[in-house]
Image (cartoon, rainbow, N blue to C red; front, side, top):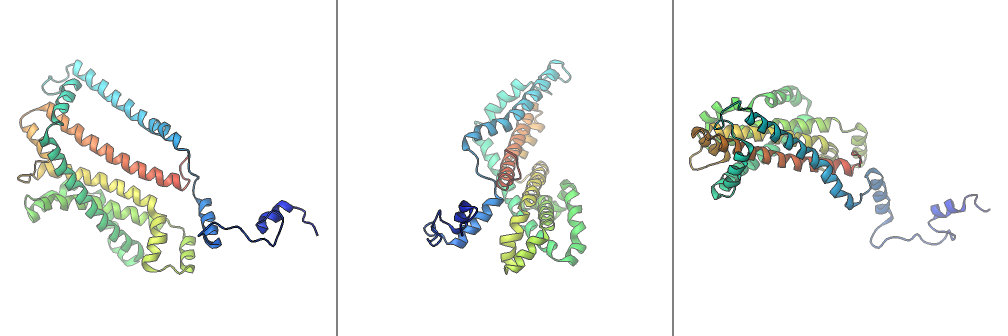
Length: 311
């Protein structure tokens, strides 16, 4: 009996006419793998034309450039108004001229190296510690009842409050600075992971259980990927806390022989060199913005990949 919808029947049978013909398969790809790949493709947003990348970059860049222009204009207007003497509040031209001279010196880049080594070391340790704590707290109710509120309390506590204790424990050393950086960042990382795991749909967990996911495999293939957006937000917030903690630490804890950005800023303040102080403030701001751009790029790429971000 002829089919009412021959094209639909042909599609179901895998041919355009002969229902007994074998289904054409891609080399090296099983039918089961092809079906799974097709299902995954339904969840993911299609890849967009790479030619639009320049437009997206400009769309994200021009508001930042406009904000910088406004700040410089207001700064120059305040200087023209002579609110403070020129040696206290120098003009943008003076500051950027001095900044151009500073960044060409080897001492400046040595200070940047010291600061960024501390920043990345402390942050990576905080990520490891925060991830472990977050995973344990999210899975064990008694542990959450015991220290769940403590983690939030540590996150809201000003990092500078830890420095007196850090100096007593570790003296004026790198360990004192790293101690405070870790305490500043780890709670945010842990809370980000806990929030992400809490919002994993229960249906997904039941499906994972049916598929036989247990222990490490369950975290690796189900829980961590599902909680990744919230975890990235926790990493971003953790970096912000660790960066602020580090800058405070470099102003308070001066380690002999380690001339970091904070130490050089303190030296400029001791010499009453306002222009140089502002130069280092700008350097710290630029580094913070660059790291934020990296986190935003990772977050946007993840959300775009899963179809959570409009074009």
